[in-house]
Length: 252
Image (cartoon, rainbow, N blue to C red; front, top):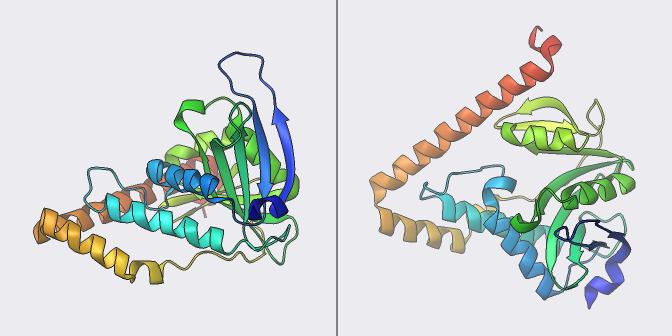
């Protein structure tokens, strides 16, 4: 399997309670086998509202469209994994010790090519059945061991979760809050997936056409307005949170 040549390290996390799973962290620099890849992709789709930069509500007809897009974005990232320890995309899997082919959580991060200490966390997700049991913390700590200057962007209501994991607020960026393991941003560049071709793809156009036929033009126009209003609300929440956390900056 290609994942074998990309496996860099593993670590066991032992639990003292019977309900907390034991798991192994596997670091991959080349794409995982299909059995693991499909679980990671399903997790991104299932937990779309937790990991997307456009966290639409399920009631919005555009929800399905953006679910597809985030799944395809992950696919694009996985395609760029080249087997190098410091390649453009790195993947961490938390695998169930009792069932090693079961993914309990994952982290996908993008090392900065011109700052050896920096990376951007693109995704962090844990299976809903195993949250608040140390898996997310273990994934994040392992990334920090390799790239101690970690940055991410999340919606305001996720900030306390990452603060509990040791990150701090730096700034508001549109609908998201930028957080970091340090009190300043890295000067390094990070490659991100270009989603413009995805939104222009035949598949996305077909999904949009299906939704248009199912809901009607007026409903779809309303869905776009709801999306924009939701993003405006998130942007306001992000700025308010940054002003609260960093009051000295709000005065300038």
